[in-house]
Image (cartoon, rainbow, N blue to C red; front, side, top):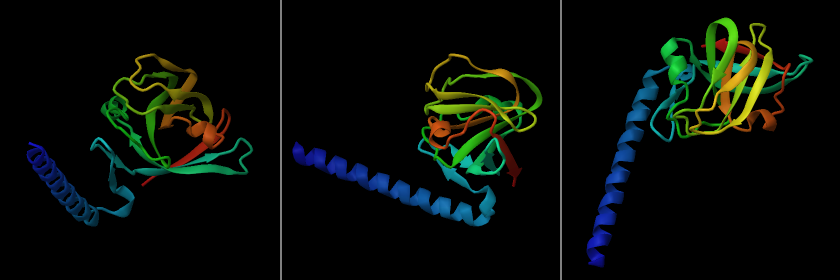
Length: 176
């Protein structure tokens, strides 16, 4: 009986290895056809991070760049609705920038979002107006901006503390 279980385990590991090799070969093929600036990076759950821009955090004084990250953009209603839902991981140098057509008080929740996030609300002058830190994964609790915002940036939970991002700091971003 133990031999039977060992054979099943070995077969399962072999199949998994073959699938990973096939996926690696597929990814390598895909990357050669895509420009470097729009390459997708697979996440743990299979949804891909698609680099669509660069973002820099600038200190209140404007003298220092606090941190630079790659961003994926959420510009349409559907993209904003989906956000980072169902992703199981994101690297510390990535984030999602939600772009709204107007200034308004915003509120986000963590429904179907498996990773803790810092939700950074930004006004039309690119100034951070509020931050909801360490948002609880899968929570349906409303996380309001408390002030009007036109942009919302989602980054890993703890990002704002780790890189000293605070109210009054600014962002600058470019689309690729």
